[in-house]
Length: 247
Image (tube, rainbow, N blue to C red):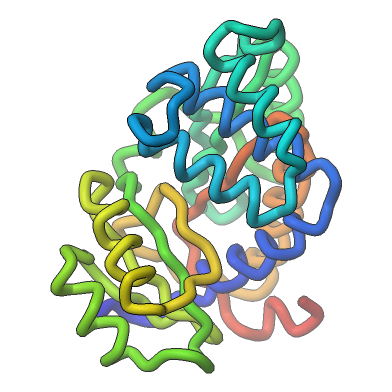
């Protein structure tokens, strides 16, 4: 089991808050469009689409919008011309950041991302200069008040989970991408309800930062997350509890 990660838990809490916002519908629909575009419109044959639909339902995206997003992804409806781009950069204190973007206007969004970094004490970086510090993983989170570490390990590790991380009020299970659906199904079959399940970029190591730097990084994080084309922001900082007393 990996060590404690305050940042992962803060990011998870912010994700739950974002799910209450109307703009999260747009992000969920884009996930479906991209998944259908990549693997077809049948969720039974497209694990990525199944996951995208699951996430969309979790935030109550209406069924007609789910169906339309699938059709846009397969080309049956207009509006599926969306690019998926991963921008790399450094925030205050040299914190490494990845910005996952889905957009129909690359020129506009890169200018907006660059402006956000510049305004908040960071800078965009060349491709490959940051991404090597992260690895794509399946990420499944559980409420710590419902399950123990031993319960999660018994089911998850047997199904192929790679790691379990203590994130304050949640446990986070990491898997290799190819094992993600199998591990998720194992928890479902065991009657264990997870809070979220998705693919994400997991930092190989977390870099401790002080309170002042943490607040600056979070300002940049918020500015990036406020962009409708930004799907997710990842970073490799580990923040002190004092930085989030007001969260």
